Length: 327
Image (cartoon, rainbow, N blue to C red; front, side, top):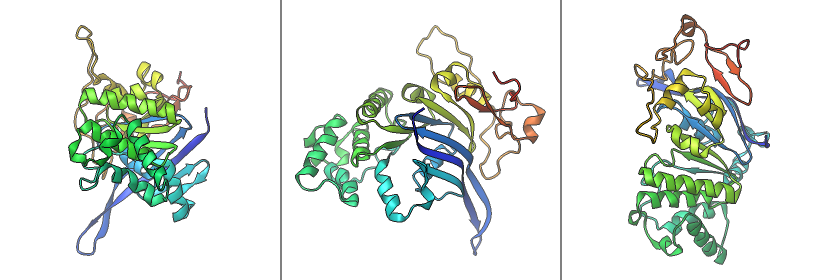
């Protein structure tokens, strides 16, 4: 295993619920409730789950864009929460974001060159002729022409806009890219192009990536390792081959059963989860998945399951397994 660029330990992000004239705190939204993971140098990590599972919040907390309630985020062994504002600002050159919506993430009043120049201005990088060369390089890298830098965002298609968003993420020559549903707003054919582009960029620029998605088909194609979240907690984590070849958690199996198979003759047993995802304001006791789990047992209502290690970095938190019988 390569060295860990980012180490997250027992991360919690709870948003207070305030009501009344005095804005008193009456409860909390338990968006992320005790997750731990690492991102190794050169690795692509996938974070998957249904809407509301906390995956985007976890990604934002890693970059310190939202405050942590508890836990630590380490960058190369140093806690980011202990860094000063100027030091954290320098660190953010190394951690850049690709946003979900290519329409709302680009300022419609700015030309593309100005959009790409903004992060350079903030950090005081690439001045004069070096700036022009950098802008041309970024656009060519993502498959656009340097001449298109004089246009406004509304003159581009959705896929082209996302390429501009990727170019902006590359503007400061980062080490880590965090993609928050980077292809979910695009047509399927365009999704494949953007995924291929991200894989090329990873290889060419020695990038590490965190890809946040609800689509297991996307993360299978691009990610080395995948963690599955449900209602603020990690229920399973494994290398992509182990997760798709031998999923352990009932929730993971249900998600995988929903992935379309490109073969009309192949029959696939779909696992239908009953009910809705519980509110993160009042999560269930015991295993948080027990209200929808097709393999629910009595113990699931009462006790939080331990995380069982099946070897090769494959772990799952489920009462179906114990440390004694994990294989």
